[in-house]
Length: 231
Image (tube, rainbow, N blue to C red; front, side, top):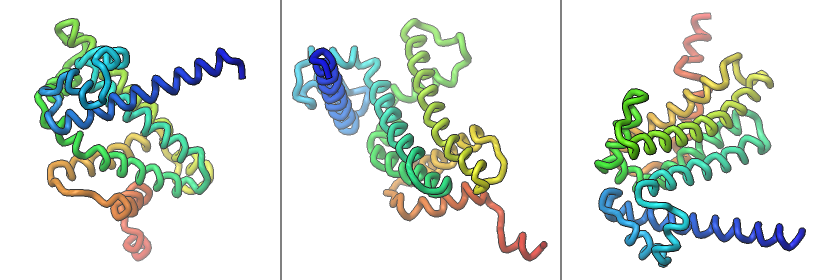
């Protein structure tokens, strides 16, 4: 490898390291103080970096939350890609993806709880739900653009799940179905379960839940014993 390529690779690793360190520090601050009360000075102190360094990687508080969410989706997609490309039947890999999603959600439980009760987050959700072309200010339009970018990343994540489902159809494990729509359904099942947990409170043991969710996804709500008796 040429020296220029080595330097470029080293710089990429350095930037990735600092960006992750900053976003991890920001998460800790947000959990303690809430997003609305968090300042860039707080993040710099938590990360033990200068404020100038912080601004090299995160332009300002207005994009801080988006950067955290982008990082989360990028990391989850990379892990999901690894499962999709790994060994095992489609059912095995689907189970592994569901378990992965549950574990990742559990690891972000404290952050999610803070964000979903923060007034700034609620404002963003109202913006996302607003009709296109009604974003208002330039800042709101920029936020909508960032939200759309997050949605596209989520769609890319769903596409990885769709590949696993399509593999299952090809191998005869799953009945013929629209893999893209089925992947969205799987995502909705996981999100719905996490939503209920959020309001009920308490922890989650992904290992105990994954079996039931996987069976629900693969078998739906039919009763195989009743079907057998009726036939």
